[in-house]
Image (cartoon, rainbow, N blue to C red; front, top):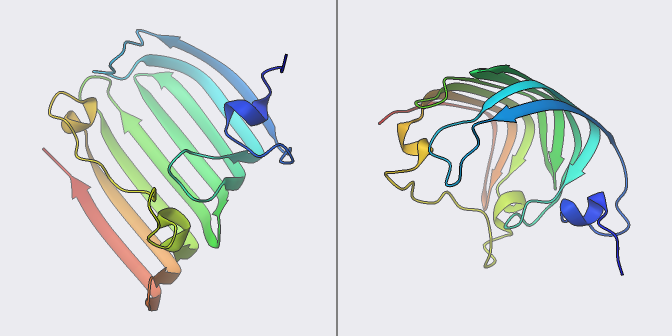
Length: 169
């Protein structure tokens, strides 16, 4: 019989063990499928964390994150995150509202290498799926800002990339 370890829950290789996490969180009104965000109160702190998300070719590592949940809103601050050669220096996600959420996402990266998220075009790379009309994401609105010091997009490389966009209905 094998026990359930954090490595198995977060899809990490057996040899990966690092980081500290603190979780003080109360969640109410969580329904599946998710048609509105649940009421959440509390906080999450991660220091030197690692997680592997199925579909991504690389582990997300060296995660430094704080998140504060205030019922109908939350703020997530990332002070470091590494995925392959890509490095996030800082990121802030702010979300307000449960049924029709509005968000602001700002990301500042030292380096972004598209292959870290797509697996060099190999099958099973990361992609953005079509959002079903009944999904909570179809009612979500927000602003996105991305700044990258060094960007590698396949055969194209550049410096000081800045993107801004909006997500609306």
